[in-house]
Picture 1 (cartoon, rainbow, N blue to C red):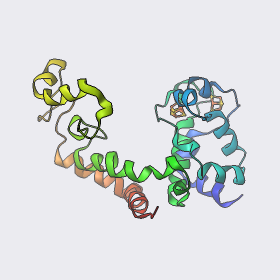
Picture 2: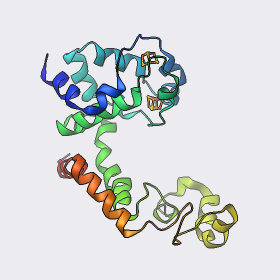
Picture 3: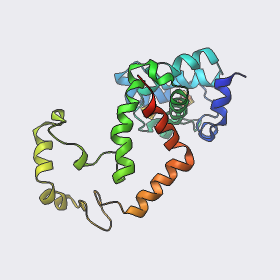
Picture 4: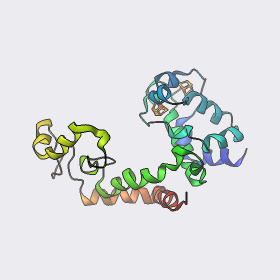
Length: 203
Ligand code: SF4
Ligand code: SF4
């Protein structure tokens, strides 16, 4: 058993996510990423299950593992109870730990993603929130988004949201003690160390 396979099997998520893949391809048939990118979760599970070190290393250095949208549709459909999306999570973590993500276009984007949504989670408790998607910086969101952000205080209550308010509801302000808890989870699970490592990588 080689080093990469060892790393895989040390990750607690791996045991849960891949028991015995029978290569049926249902995950690929349901996967939205497979429709738009050169991406095949069945093939990834097959490579990992075969302990093929060379093919695993190639995956870790490739764009492929970054195409998954983490929708977890595969989890609901796999007849063997596997979760290819979670297998991808383990691959992504190892790729970043070894710095292999810096060898692919999609992998290099992780630094920006951590500067954006990663920082948002720690700061406000949301990956994406209307306050963080400035229409001037995101013209691709279109004119309706710009109008929505401008009128959010009037519009949010109309769809039941509690925009930056105390108490429950969508778009509510996340309490400081909850933010502290999120930070703690990042710290004890190694997420903060991994984040720092990726942010420090020179591209
Ligand atoms: S659906 Fe499950 S068993 Fe079928 S190929 Fe995907 S992971 Fe393997
Ligand atoms: S979690 Fe990833 S692999 Fe699974 S269906 Fe969604 S995009 Fe595809």
